[in-house]
Image (cartoon, rainbow, N blue to C red):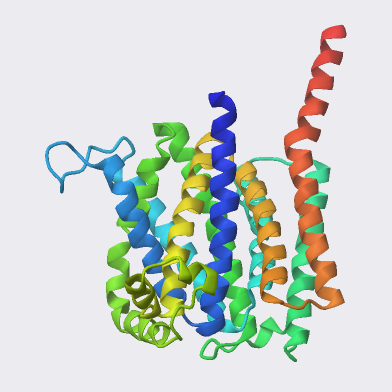
Length: 349
């Protein structure tokens, strides 16, 4: 029973938490696109607080247990984690929609493979083909989104001082490359010191918090804009069930601030699921699982928020998610089948 409940729990955390997180994220961005920094900070604070009990020491409320993973490795993991999250959320300020953001982040399979290849790992022909198709799909999707905004996809003349669409693409690319190396680094760290994912989760967020201090003016400005959003409105049947005092309290909460809280809570569930999966699986498996989750989030974004896609964008999305599925099948089924067949033939000889 436990062997069934653990995978089911991880699946629920990743798909329930991550997909709900995308919904809350898009609701925030509809009101204020330039809120990435504040969103990241709130997520980091909540995850740090929720993970603290698992790392606290009985000697006192402010004491922490001795880490099983060296602090220098946890600090390196935290630095990469902070940069990846900052870059991914920063990209929303460059006129990149949530569906396109999801598609471009699916490029992680490519960067994960490239990082593994640089470390001496080799891949099958079908894996390479799927990555080529996925790369083509990402390029088509980015091109289609640029055309829909009346822009040309010309990365040779990026203006780093302006909120250009091309700069947003470059930021996402850098984030995906860094994320690939982070995944491999964490996997090696677990292999050397044990699968202490909860420890890595806590220190990645704790060590990142001081890095927000120099950005306090921007954080204050972003929160002020979110607090100026209309008050939260509950459906009338639901509101009628609540006491008048609770109704008045809810009416005082700005809609975007409420979505910010929901975004942080669902991100906590999502990150917990990803870390659990990372402790039990390879970096490639994690990437594949997250690509499937991104497909679900992509479909929800189109359905719930009415995001429209051009025919070219649909082609790009189909190439991306289809190639991701092919890569996953080859990695988890195809290679193992051929290896088993070769072993049987070897025994017959």
